[in-house]
Amino acid sequence: DTEVTQTPKHLVMGMTNKKSLKCEQHMGHRAMYWYKQKAKKPPELMFVYSYEKLSINESVPSRFSPECPNSSLLNLHLHALQPEDSALYLCASSQDAGGFNYGYTFGSGTRLTVV
Amino acid sequence: TQLLEQSPQFLSIQEGENLTVYCNSSSVFSSLQWYRQEPGEGPVLLVTVVTGGEVKKLKRLTFQFGDARKDSSLHITAAQPGDTGLYLCADAGNMLTFGGGTRLMVKP
Image (tube, rainbow over all chains, first blue to last red; front, top):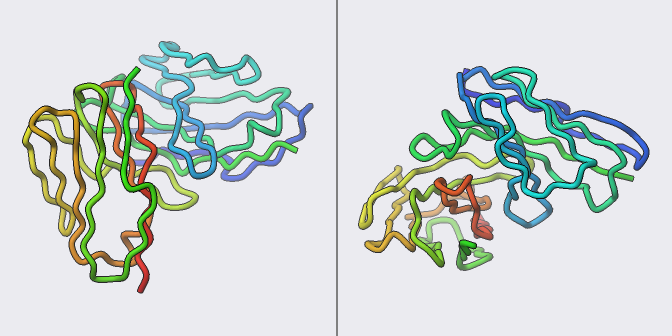
């Protein structure tokens, strides 16, 4: 299995809702990432988990709450989002933090719309 | 803060034409990667270059890494509609900091 699977593919939520994005990989990768991508822009790093511990938080607002229940799963809990948070949310993994030699494997993303 | 600039930002060409896109960094890359992203999908790794002066080929794609490891180019020979997408360079040694991307459209 050489894939990163993200669910759901599309999500529409209100500003008072609580929802979660899920990401799963079974490649034995020990680093997992959340990126946010606005239309016509490159992906921007949000969080890095290395060996199931949060190692980088790129000053992301607390309405985004990551969780890494085990080495294969990564969640992003969403609460009280704003319309400007609408974007494609990408999950990625790499053998270890940095992806220096082997690269990053990305999921197909969750297209989030906040109404 | 490292700045990655890609040029051109947009490129629209006819099938069969050749093209080159560029990636320049304000500082030395530890490891440079090129990705291609299609609409509604995540980026897919094309190549990793590490050594200054390195050249790698992937079918019709040729990647060059500058001697000083601060710039790179991607050349596509005889472009096809399937090459359409967003081409991103990234510094893999910096938690994958991406350049702004080159949006390529190849018309049949």
